[in-house]
Image (cartoon, rainbow, N blue to C red):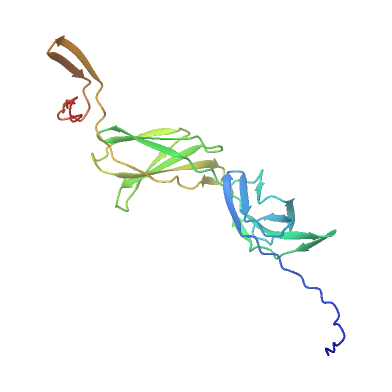
Amino acid sequence: IRIEGPVSSAIGVKTALEVPVLTPQSTSYTSILLTWKSVPTASGYEVYGVLGSKTPTTLLATTTATSYTHLNLSPGAYYTYRIRAYRMVGTVKVYGSYTADFQLAPIPATPVINVVSNGYNSLKVSWNAIAGAGAYEIYYQKEGTSDYQVLVLGNVTSAILTGLQIDTNYVIKVCAVRLQNNGRLYGENSAPVILKPLPLTPKVTGTVIDYQTVKFTWTAIDGATGYRIEKLNSESATY
């Protein structure tokens, strides 16, 4: 025989929502992109922000996405952000906890650079134009050293570094700069490119003299002290 006691009263239990992992980044001199990981069972997210370092209480957006772009910001001014997830239970929003506050300032975007040898002692550096930038700076140094040189430029998208050491690797970065009344607003440095200056490639022309003779001529290369001619053996496919 099993004898049962009375049933207990019902107890409501809330399943807490996870706190989103927030990652803010500047995408231009007037915008900041906020991204976060999706929270299981969340119905949406609320994004809060404020100019300055105060606790962000202004609701910027309610969204079901996992990103939000804050536009039309003041270049170089710091903004503070936080978000929280919510789940709809009927018509009621059940909220998770806020993320930690994050501060960030909109700065010029980061250039993508290309570097090619421009001769035995020079390299040509080029990059994409950055919105809002009025100047650029190139930082370069010999690989393995800590001393770098700076080339300050205007609103251009390429420059030639001269006076370099032949056959020596150089580490090169470019930074976009916005010119403002209160000074220069710097973006992040580009990803570094490592390259060494080498003599340029000659342009070769061949002229048949007779059935056994071909004459080759080529453009003179600045800095070259000699030239090497290689002949391909068609049978062995070796030079």
